[in-house]
Image 1 (cartoon, rainbow, N blue to C red):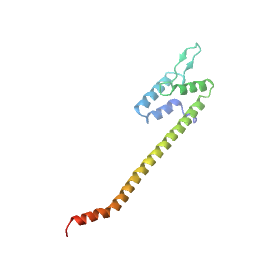
Image 2: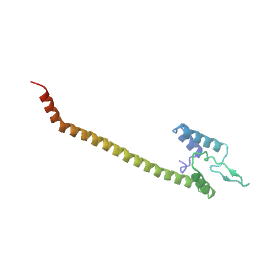
Image 3: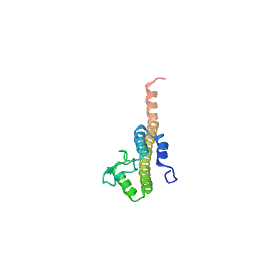
Image 4: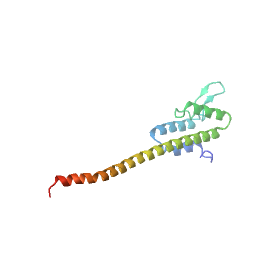
Length: 138
């Protein structure tokens, strides 16, 4: 969205609608800070004072904020945001892949247990029928 010229405030407005309360709180704080004129990422101002950035709400870990500050100082903030997004997508895909494998293995174990129980029950059926027929008198 940002690459296509959509302003970050508009992006936040769209994303806020789809998020949980925790994320919504952080995104609302970001949007308020942007409206109040905060820079996107903090850093040192001309007087050497540390400024808080609009994106620094506690949601993003410190290394990510530091990376954003570094890219912001070099004028490549958009690149940094894209890079962080792609890295997170890769991490998310890895987590999804691991979860899919775990779920597939659980389904296999359950399926094998059911098949094993059916085989056992089929093999012991003749013994059960013999015992039943000997216990009843015709």
